[in-house]
Image (cartoon, rainbow, N blue to C red; front, top):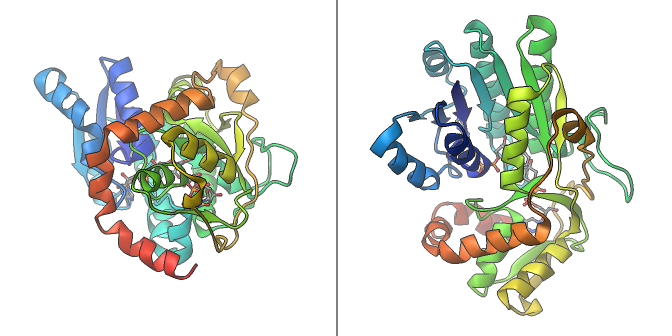
Length: 340
Ligand code: NAD
Ligand code: TDX
């Protein structure tokens, strides 16, 4: 199988490529990534080294998924499946400036869908998010039939791409599948998201900016479990369907923070309650029974095991995140937190 993976230099995309490369020794993988602030070729250095020595079945292409000419040049060479991870992925940035979210997340998806259709790709997987469903009250779960009600420019752009993906199945018969996963954590996550930001801040003895009352709830899943779920969907999912993916692990942000401080042996005085994120969704929780019963997926990591692996990885890979934290992304954060 020849796979085009987009956004493979980011957090989940790089974990997915590593997983697929090791699991399927005969698969060819093309990674198309524009190397935005969140893309990092370091994330796949081990795979590149292994591949250059032996297999020669991994290719990196630097480019934009919204570049129709480039995308068509890649896909016309014979691609069996497209897995679209490429996105602007951070809610806070979408509140700061939403334009690029529309360009990449919606227009980019449209270019990929068109190329998939034109060149008869047999599988198109759109990697979406539980955030498209909006916010839950204290009870209930998101199912695949929950109406879409996105609340941030980020989630609105992802919902737009979902609807477009659905339309390519309904109108043209392109074999599309949408996955909607809950919050991921694990190795190589960019330290702007809650868990890696708080781990790395705590290791530097700097403050942990907890939004609002710290009681917003997310459903956490270890990134490798997300990858195994996408593998199932890619090979066995039904075209035209949506599959929710979740970790069955609801935690408040405060609980996450306390767990991290305890694991790192750092004081609670590092917590700094700051102004809430505008439009902050209160609670996400996922019903992924369709994926489990239909495709036989189950998660391998509980929260404790996943967090142990994650914290250990950040402790052992300080140069990886220290380089990032002294770079461009701090400018965004300086502005963001000055307002709080
Ligand atoms: P990330 O920000 O770490 O990585 C995104 C990658 O996409 C980067 O490598 C970046 O360079 C690349 N990219 C951005 N714009 C591009 C463009 N125009 N053309 C080509 N490449 C481009 O994001 P992530 O956390 O790994 O998320 C990956 C996907 O999974 C996204 O679609 C996101 O919406 C979805 N998702 C993420 C989570 C989560 O918890 N992180 C949960 C559910 C779904
Ligand atoms: O500094 C912070 N302080 C804080 O309290 C940050 C960065 C976050 N938070 C809160 C906001 C959320 O309630 O922590 C929670 C998690 O925040 P993020 O890590 O920014 O993730 P979230 O907004 O939930 O979105 C993530 O999950 C779904 C990903 O970024 C999305 O790409 C994915 O679709």
